[in-house]
Image (cartoon, rainbow, N blue to C red; front, side):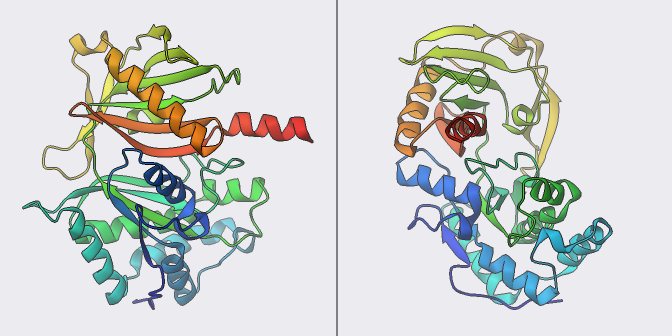
Length: 323
């Protein structure tokens, strides 16, 4: 089945005019803010919520989480996955994708990430609830990844999260972020305040080898680094880092491998990288207006930021204190 196409703001560049979470989702909006502040963000674009809503309406999909039963969810996901992108949208998606690799001989590998409208906000993180696909290469794979991101909006976990947090009556929509794939030698998560104690005079970094999915999924015991407000290292605890996720040999997808034993006991980040990551994160967080959690990677000695969101534990504590 081919769905109709809504041309207005269907594809939005991450480096363009800020569009807001209602159009590019929380993750997309966070990346636009980062890019606008000059942060090192991989080039990319977002397939907006308008495109999803046009598809959902055409396919007769529900628009609110409180209007579905648990038993309906598999058929909703199947309907999305069996549909075809309309020709105009597929063409726009192809042009935007090929522009990312305009100076390369091969089709570029990209990261395709779901970006729901309330995701990565000060109140809701949605961490791990929607799908991400790494090492996507070629138009056919890209279109399939977009539909799988759309379908992840209707898993039991995602719907339950919305209902539990009072988002069920809200319109359920999602954007999809497509960015050039960075083949990270090491990945990190940096908090500009201690997410456990809430201390704002501390910066905390977790780091491991390879792509960041091993780190955010809890697959590894990472290095744990604590710095003071001036960026001086207070403690660097080296984690075991027994496994890592790396791009597949053919450049499509990823695979999990064992970290060589000689690398497990050495720091994933060099001292100057720790200092640079902490400094950049603190400067950006100050301009974003509060304690922030960043995900990023180091490739070829260059630092990249892939995601930014408020530290919800601290935001929640502030809301409770003000109540």
